[in-house]
Image 1 (cartoon, rainbow, N blue to C red):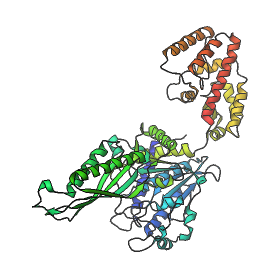
Image 2: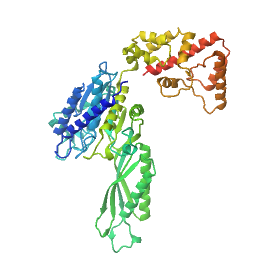
Image 3: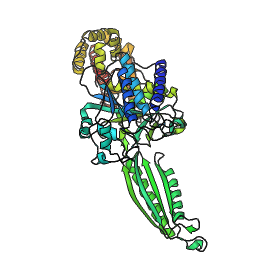
Image 4: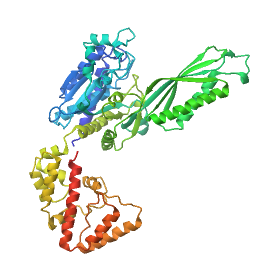
Length: 582
């Protein structure tokens, strides 16, 4: 797998920063970035992004709900695609990286692949979603829910502040409301979705890490809450006889903070609004209305916390002679990121920055809608001070360069050529290097390479086994000399060690007697035959291996060479499967 160099990443990051500035200039207000769904500025941004996609080697189109899309073909046509992207709309008076950074970095990844003629077994598509923020119509994820075909009935009639409906805005933008369904993509079109996004929080900055991998997008519940007491004269009602709704609400607010802090750090709860009635300086508050927003990457932990907070509100109200009531007005489930995509991103982050912090996303993203149909993964990039949805939103070019290197590695792993195709098309030396860790028998390696191309992994494995039938004592010695610990516990992070881990058995490390017996048996074997004991350990218990070791100590040299060659063959087949099986 090729890797973007530091110099290439820096140059690409500088282009991303310049293009972010160019998109920020496309705004309905000259002094503050605002770009809303189906506005002239949205369409202008789409046209600009399409030009950059085409320059990167992509075929582009605008879909039926106003998303701008581009496709970079696989090595063969009509293959499923890995989907990359984010949104191009903004809040009012926005920053210039929320959403846009994910689209622009994806374009740079494709441009880098295109410049090198690298095409994988899967295509790559990039989408700039038209509406994630919901700024214009008050409904969110219009672009990504168009892609998944999950627009609710009634959205077309929703109106903006000027009374313009979504349907009217679509017609004005040159779109046909009757064709919304054509934006939906069937499940087989995509194998997964990756979204790169600024963190919008301070965690990565606190950990001094440029990149982090998202574990889940928090689910959220929002409630209107209320404490009802009795209004009274501020000067005439004694403190002991008051039913002060604000005092009860204040106690509950402190309980919300303390209870949430004592739980999982990923849980957050916020009292966002507060309104007192009657709201006079000389009147005891008789009623207080307030809102609760509670979020977590786990629905179960969120709901458990919510139950405790509501119970606390009821207890406080009862003790103070108040009435506590609540009603939910918003509920969104947590969106877990796909474990395989997470691991891909973790490996890429470790490769470029030495570590991979894991964190949930407290904000919503297009990935929430996409996850209803395809696996999703998210890569976060550090932003200064955790500031977002604000003109001060900022990222460092060095961090964007790191992100591009990790993103490129991830995309290559997920959409790149299969190991078999790489083997079939590589030079003889490169192909031989791919299989060298499987068995260091040069003649066997060369013969397997000479048999290319192979139509399938099964055909390659069958040929490898057939060629291994010619192995003799000299071949066994050659393999053991290169890998003296073959079949033993794999250590380190070499390719050979990684493949060897597939061969390990489930030996109980706490069984001292068994470990001692195996060590003594190995010593006897090496003293008798002059080589390490070779056995395919996968699927065998320690007791089974010990019994086999004792039996093979009774072999003569010819018998034992044949048994050892047989075990070498099985180990080699396991290793080949590790290299070539998708």
